Amino acid sequence: MIKDITIGQFFPGQSVIHRLDPRMKLLITVLYIVMLFIAKGFSGLGAGVIFMLIGFLLSGIPIKMMLKSVKPILPIIIFTGILNLFFITSGNIIFEWKFIKITDNGLRTMAFMAIRIILLIFGTSLLTYTTSPITLTDAIERVLSPLKIIKFPAHEIAMMMTIALRFIPTLIEETDKIMSAQKARGADLESGNLIRRAKALIPILIPLFVSAFRRAEDLALAMECRCYRGGEGRTRLKQLKTAPRDYFALALTVIFIAAIILLNRYSPI
Image: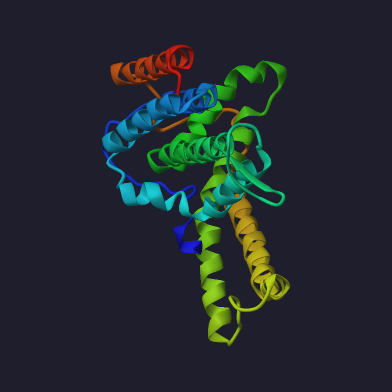
């Protein structure tokens, strides 16, 4: 399960999605999230599915990686689905036993919420899959740069967000190594009840926190040795420039949003 977490990973490539301006990719990702939340029916979510499939096909990211990004949050999806299934009691009753009541509205809401969460994970994963951490830092800083008028630390916030995102795969790899080492010493991490499993995580969490603090200290020392002083007076090797393909991607996103609005109004599903 630990190895299946792909949050924060970057897959180098030369696809159309990889070559999009990172600022435009951030904007398109936000619009895609808006697109999913304004969808009121399965027809609207269907448009979101088509949009996401187009993005993944153009990016060259394997479908296997797309499905792998959902696996770690599968328990959350199942838990959310069960809550919607049993707590929504309006509509036609399909199954009833004592205090348990399953209705068609409950089933519909369960499926709707599960698809929406999966699509949200796909959209954010595609952004990190096709954008390097350094480029993402520059994009976030550029997007937040208008807030510098009110003394908002745009560069520092962007740097912290990107470092946190970049450290996720590193900490996942470290966790896997610690778990393998503890199992080699005879630690039982998988059997027993919930309380026993929680206690078995203590020999993992303590070395993990120590390693995380050590890595953070090494990173801070390395930045200080390179005379890092924040964004003031900083120059960039690569300048961000928009191209016609960026505006085409933005226009396509707006078209899909308009289509979902029309589907909300005229589609009965």
